[in-house]
Amino acid sequence: MSVADNLAAVRTRIDDACRACDRNPGEVSLLPVSKTKPPSMVDEAYRAGYRLFGENKVQDALAKSELMDDDHPGLEWSIIGGLQTNKAKYVARFATEFQALDSLKIAHELDKRLQKEGRQLRVLVQVNSSAEPQKSGIAPEEAVDFARELAAFDSLDVRGLMTVALNSSDQRAVADCFDLVVATQEKLRQEAGDTSDWSELSMGMSGDLEIAIAHGSTQVRIGTDIFGTRDPVRTWRP
Image (cartoon, rainbow, N blue to C red):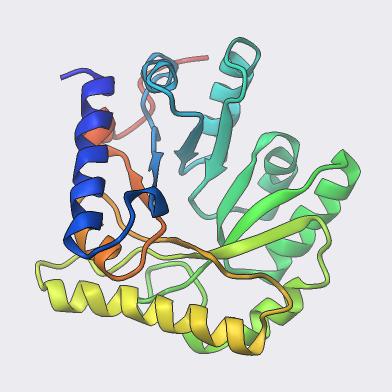
């Protein structure tokens, strides 16, 4: 199947999942995650109508941006992986969105760089909903204090929350992760509502998108089911 066929199949899954829980399919967007895949595959998805693409690594997104942006009007990049402070200057230069914010140090560096660039950046706060120590993200109980601190950074347009749920065959345990993020969203709206409307919930990937949608996701991040198995290393060169 082509990338366009895979996108259509995933979109059908999303729509079916929405209907199964009485949600409007228009409430849930699809973020294709191209990761190690070549620009030619991003181009296929672009020609299928998609404009925003997720990348784990800043250097991969930057390389694709430099190769593709001029010939692909409206093409945008969302960084969904962790960020080191020395890479903030690149994100500030080209990215539209950063979904893995969990550090005030990173927030400060991004804001400083964005001000120099005269740009704003959409951001989502990453929540560690599974309490796994190897995963990034703030603890849910830290979310309100963290959100209040973010109000100082004028260049950051805070939109909502992102999480990576437990990788488990136990659907209830996976659902509990998503429910915890929704509860965090409600707490933020009650106690830090002046910092954002917290409307965006980026939850769900190829293996758990139906559960995520049933539990409130507004965006699913899909790589494997669109572009195929992730390559161990980048197989293309700028």
